[in-house]
Image (tube, rainbow, N blue to C red):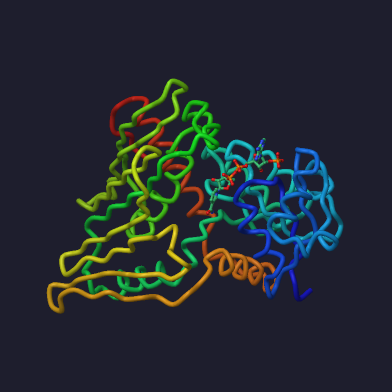
Length: 334
Ligand SMILES: NC(=O)c1ccc[n+]([C@@H]2O[C@H](COP(=O)([O-])OP(=O)(O)OC[C@H]3O[C@@H](n4cnc5c(N)ncnc54)[C@H](OP(=O)(O)O)[C@@H]3O)[C@@H](O)[C@H]2O)c1
């Protein structure tokens, strides 16, 4: 096998972007897409990459994709609360799975997915595309090379005003996956965790909730122990922000568009006590393309993915603790 054969579940908005990337990857091929809405699978192929309409199969429902004999890997960009049930079916059908963030909305579900993936000997990864962009790799290099000194504090901000067409994302309480915490929160929190050596010890957050109990805005703190700490702000009410900044005793570094690099180009701005201010432009790159290329390589070479199982587990553990903190209005230990 020199290419991975893919199936996609659901005609989600994100599929418009990702479908041509999976289909045109150097080490992957798109075989089929299924949607629960009649004809939506076909129309998303037409919209995203019309040349593929006679090449990629489209199905009503998911079972024909999950049980497809030619398919080796399944991409799951469904609503967060549908990740676990569909991923379990795919894993038990011996398919590798790439699940959009967050892998699930309960730690116990992530544990189940990971143990089933082990049992059925398939590769599983949570889809954090930004981690594959060279601008983020550059930031991690700076942290590792110690030019900033050890990270003492980091801050992330993700926001945009939510459009009326997307109000179904805020029509249910946080515990059922509604609101900013489970939607854009995974990015803000995952990114902060990558900047520290330790796992979070405890968290605290406060939210503005709407009438359905979904958070429109959440501000929180993550305590990594030994006075290492991070803060984040996520919102569906503020103007667009997509940034992370890291601080050590010797310097600071920031990515101004960490999850939404402009025109695929990246930028890291940093300053150190010794050398002053710098701005580094990172060459063009598509983080989704790099993510799928990497996952395909892991399957083809039987190597572990860069985003590990433990990472997915800690991501959802931290989000779940933040959810609890919002409802208790208190610190929650992890
Ligand atoms: N990595 C990224 O950059 C990125 C960006 C956005 C979202 N995400 C993640 O990707 C996943 C999907 O997010 P999304 O915002 O793209 O999903 P979405 O558009 O809300 O779609 C989610 C699911 O709902 C169904 N659906 C879509 N449009 C619908 C409509 N008009 N009426 C009824 N049902 C509809 C689709 O399933 P059927 O086709 O089967 O009906 C689809 O798979 C989430 O886990 C999210 O966190 C990732």
